Image 1 (cartoon, rainbow over the protein chains, first blue to last red):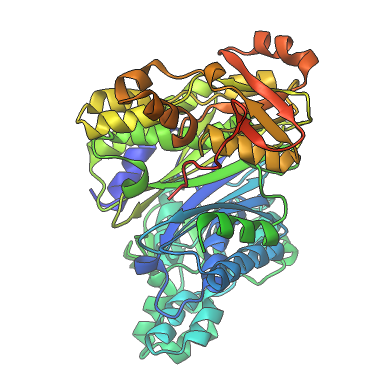
Image 2: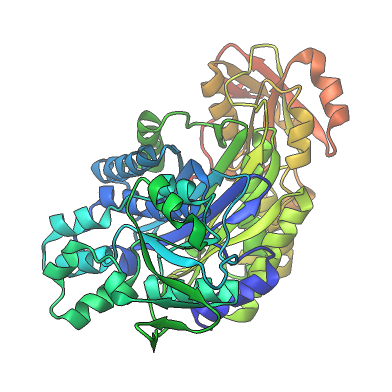
Length: 290
Length: 290
């Protein structure tokens, strides 16, 4: 059974799954596990690992339009070297400070492979789900895409400082909160822009039509990709960028864009069916989390 | 650096650690990672693993005297066999149902070793910490000790059904809530009774004097241990029993015992200093979580 099939099995057994966070009362909660072979390329510092792992969970909180309250992390490693553990904790603390969440520690686990498990908890009285998009809404995104794909290329080339810089993204918590009163549906782009569009479309039972020229591409992608096709691959399919992808009713778009503390870009329109880029079917291909 | 040293490093960097849960506003939160080589002996079913892993986090919520609101789990495994995953989820759901918490899923991770990471979140306006015990308070425990140590022996002997039964403990959430208005300090016994007494004593800057004859020992221990000394080892040092260990001011003991839905037993008295059993120093030796 692959991950998608397994997720749908979970969805059949556990009520209320399918969004970036679970919602219980006024709380939203999410948990993730990352580990060395699939998530932290050679050269990733422990500081970056802590920032990124906790950031991934905070991004899920952002995707619900919630405020981020608490984050926890389990640090699993073959041994607990003090400078490594300190760097990791500093990364966790700093990413939480960046979004106004409290980092409260977690657990240590002696583990054969470096493995990090993170949890974030937020609060919202009116969270945004993936399921509310309606035909005619604008499809909008925050920030720029391709940053993590570019980072991986830098890591592969031994440019680890550049890779680390790009790997430490800003979770869009403040932006998520600013968009929440306007957005009809929202998620983060951890599986890639293409897959996110498919997931929003499926959850909302609609289609999406977007234009590649309107997709904001991170400037780092140009230096990392070896062709325009490769740039597009990194920006549209690679994933792990942790931007927000949302639908906003036409009448609210300018208010939403103005309210958001980072750039929000319209890349297309919600349609009745089918996910298309520049008029062509957009393959549902992206990052599958190991 | 060993686990104790690493934990004290974390305590120096992250504020508010040192209790079974972190406390933020009216929330308590905890996370744990368990994995095959150190936590799930051969023969542990996925149902038991789900129950036990989520139960361990719920036990931390119980130790704060909080109600249990939400639990999440990450299921990391080399592959996602559907009957295994279904059994695991059933264990997670059932242990949550047993304590009135909502199981809301989590994450899947393709991981070389079967690894489970769990999070539980609870609510309390007045959580109980480890630090409030005062000389003269009664030292009390819930349930009985030695169950997990006995289970391990059954697993080793191939009596896996018995081992699995004993491994699925009831997290003491309702009892923790009943004790909370009375207890001056509380924690769970995941590291063993002896170590828990030392940890309560250190956090409260006091001592503990207990009597082994008063320690309730699970009936399964008799069948599993090969001598009275071995019984004592399983009951006092082995750990992983997830009972509550607390201090209760003398005047409140009978009210606390009456309010609790499970047996609460007085095993001794809080003293000025030193942790003693039957008048002898009690070694600070117990389960170190791998």
